[in-house]
Image 1 (cartoon, rainbow, N blue to C red):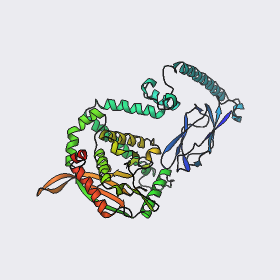
Image 2: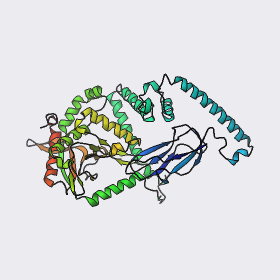
Image 3: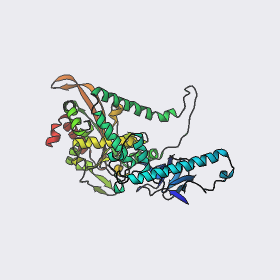
Image 4: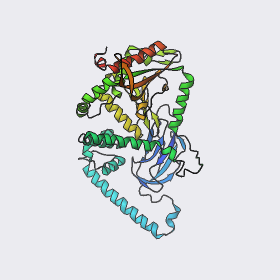
Length: 439
């Protein structure tokens, strides 16, 4: 019996998707709930699993095609694929017969494995096919994975979390120099990823070549939102600089103990998130938004953190950042950043947000004017920390200085509030004890 694999219900506000990479080819065997194709929306990548076990008999759409909810993507012939209607099966070719025998043997082997799996159900939780494959590749036992699916079913994401936790525990035993080398390697890998689009022009530098490629759906969405922000807001940017010496000293003093106690590195972003929350409490208009003719004041602090990914800029949200500890902020940011690189950030995790922070300093930016993320009314831009000569107590000394930029919607926020808001963040960072005392 043939089963249609259709585009699932898309997230709210998403009307269509682009067919991404096919994980299976025509004629391949597929298991129930095994991912066969990825769909790319303007925000997230969705995996489309097969609803039945069998053979992928027909692919209805190709990579790059645009589809909507309910469209048929493929046909899966249940069972081992016999009677799928392929005329080529009657040509008597010896290789075809051999392949059929191998298919039957493999099918029998799979049945035997299934029987073994049934016997083990009482001992180990059920895992999806993709999760089983990932566990086998990384030598992870099902009993070591906490399943988040229905009835404790283990998903691929659960296995990835277990792998990450395993890697994190191993990193505790690494010397500081080794961890720095790992960080350097990650940066180099990211740099290679970011050059992928430039490499599309080929490897012959002497040729005057050009290539036309369609924009990804997420890139189209980014373009639309940036254009909307520039055309429909009265955007203005104010600047200030902050002396990072106190925060750097505090971080150097406690970073090893912090990482040991909380299993996460102490970065600068948690200080800025906490400083932004405190400043938003003092200037609630910066945490507000415009809805037609009304001003909506938000009594919560959902801070968006811009993250660069191979698919483009994503802004996952830290929910209730005012209620999170420094360790929770750092852990959440690390998790969101990692999953953004892997295309695993969900739509819900990028929905909402009352204020955004973006850090161009990780790429070496000295100064920029960040663009507001509508319907928010403001965005804070962090930049690279550089040693610069400044006057302290009448003397010229070298200090680690960072430029800050606050872009805001002048329709809602007056210049006075914007300047004082940014100055508040500067004061809190330069004297981090004020964050604890809330003074």
